[in-house]
Image (cartoon, rainbow, N blue to C red; front, side, top):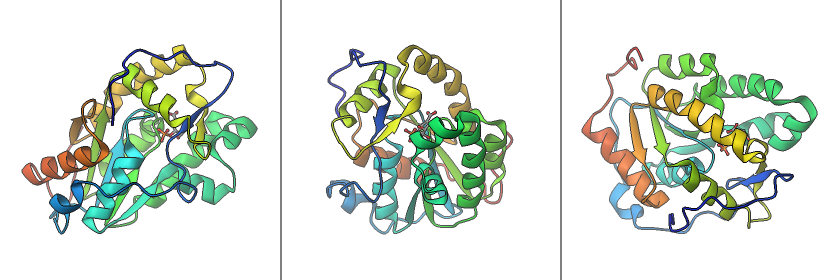
Length: 229
Ligand code: S3P
């Protein structure tokens, strides 16, 4: 993932910014160098990997690669919500408001956490909810990984994704000043729920996936609990 453009781009404030992932409508990521290095690796004691981080952190692109290489399923929380409610995320925001979205997001998260051998990409705002953080912490055999980058890099990535007409809009990136406030508000939550933080500024999604597996194999979490963060 390129980090060449670090300046915050100017962007029309009246349009929602798109999300990179729109499973079902996007072409799959190209094969890459992670294919060989991750294939066949096992992660004893871990039933699911949950990727968290702000919009543009690479949760979906990294999650797809990671799942593929582990032979697990990839689940995207926003996609799950859209499938359940037959609405896009921006439609849910505009028709029912963010509070309603957060409510149905929590229900969808609880459902996804019941599955095994899955890589789950959260929406960037899910860890704002205390109930979601508790659920993540208390679900056994679950490794939460925080994909970190600076706000400017994240906005640059989201802006680049805007070129894809099939990408889903991101209502909470419409107002960049408010988005930056959310970024600073959320960071401590991402850090607290995560077993590992991967700094993604210089990494491609494939390299990020490799870093996640390396971190998990180096320090496997205790089996049956997640600690008391
Ligand atoms: C949101 C992030 C989005 C999506 C929704 C709200 C947020 O997911 O859940 O637009 O508040 O940060 P991504 O982080 O996958 O873009």
